[in-house]
Length: 237
Ligand SMILES: [Zn+2]
Image (cartoon, rainbow, N blue to C red):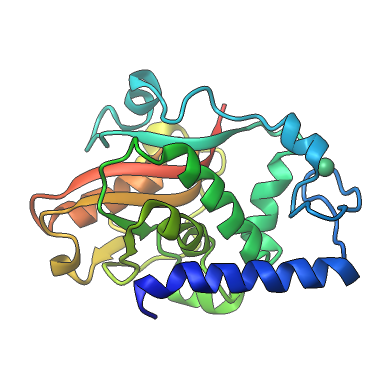
C-alpha cells in the first residue's frame, strides 16, 4: 500500500467504525461499560482518568535504568503507566491477546499525537514476533501500534528489516541481567539497507526492563550508522 493512502484508509476505517458503533456500541476496554455515541474503545470517564506518563518522553533516568549497559536510545516515548493492580492493564491484554487490532492502532495514534514535534526519527520498526507466533495470533500487535502511529508522524514502517528467529522465550521470574541474556540474538537483521544511516523508532506494546528492545537495537546496529529512539504504549512502574 502506498504510504500516501494511509489517511484515506484511516478515514474510511473511522467511517465504518462510526456506522458499526450505531448498531454494536461495544464496551469500554478498561471498565467494561457500554460505550455511547462518539466514544471509541475507551469511555469518557476512563479517558479522563487515563494514567498518562508524566511527559511526552521519559527522562534520562528511565532510559538509563533500562538501557544503561548497552546501546542507549536517544529517547523513550511511552503513553501510560502499566500497573498490575489497575484496570488500564487490560488495554495491553486486549492489544496482545484478544485480536483487537484496531485498539492497538488507536492507542498508537494517541501515543504519536503526544510525540508529534518531539521525535526526529525517520522510520518505524515494530518489534517482530516469531513468524509462527504471528501466524497463530493472526497479527503482530507492535505492527498494529505502528500502523496507528505512521500517519500521525508521517513516517514509513520498515517491518521487513528485522526477523525474530527464536520464540517462547519466557522472561518470568528473571532478573534484569538474566532477561537481557535470555533474549540475546533472538533477532536477525534481514534488510540492512532499510535502516542503514537512519534514525529508527522501535515500537512495542510494553517496556519492562528494555531487554527485548535492546536485543532489537543490537541486531539493527549491524546495518551501520543507525540511531535509535523507542516508543511503547506502556511503561511498567
Ligand atoms: Zn471505561
